Image (tube, rainbow, N blue to C red):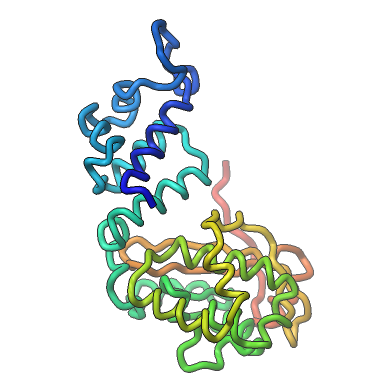
Length: 285
C-alpha cells in the first residue's frame, strides 16, 4: 500500500464528483469538472488546510467523525465507504478506529446482553466477538446449531467450524457462498492483530486452499442480507435471514438473530424451538 493511499483515494473521488451532484453551482473557470478542495472542506465541515494535509499524506490519523463527514460529503456508495474505512484502518491501526481490536477477543457478556438474549427466547440468536467465537446464545440457537455439530467444541467458532468440520458442507448447501461471506465479514470486522493473525495462520494450515485463497483474495463488501439455506437434521431445509446488530459499548461483539425467510421455515423453526406465535402489537398510525 502507498504511504498516501488515503490521500489518493480522497483526491480521486473529489475530482470525480461534480458540483451539481452535491447541490453546488457549476460556476466558471474550473480547471477540472470535480469539486474544489475548499468546496469539499466546507461540505464536510473541516478546514481546507486539514483536507490538504490528508490529501498530501501529511496526516494519517483522521478521526471516525472526519471519515464519516467526508464519506457523506462525497456521496460515497456502500462499496466506496467500505474501501475508505479499510484504507484508514490499515493506516492508523486497530486501536484508533476500532477500540479494543488489539486486545484479546472480548468474551464477557454484560448483564444487559444476557437480559436481551433471554427476552429473545426462543428465537435463534447468538452473540459473537470479532473472531466469530460463539460467546452466548439462546436455547433456540442451541436447537438450531447443536445438531449440526457447531457447538461440539468447548470454544465454538463459526469460521473454524465452516472450514474445518466436514459436517459444515452438508449443513450449508451453498457452502461456497456462505464461506465467501463469512471470510469477508471476518476481514471487515477485525483489523489485523496478533489474535486474528493466529486464527488465520491456524486455518491456513488446517483448512488449506479453501480458506487461504479467500483470505488472500481482493477485499470485498460482505453480501447484502439474503436468504441462506441451512440443512438441519431434524427440521429439514431452512431458509434463514440473518439480522446482525452491532452493539455500542460491547467493544468487538455483535448479535446475530436468525429469522425465517418463508412460511415453511417459520413453521419448522416454531416446531424446533417450541415457539408459540402471538399477535404482533403495533402502534396505530
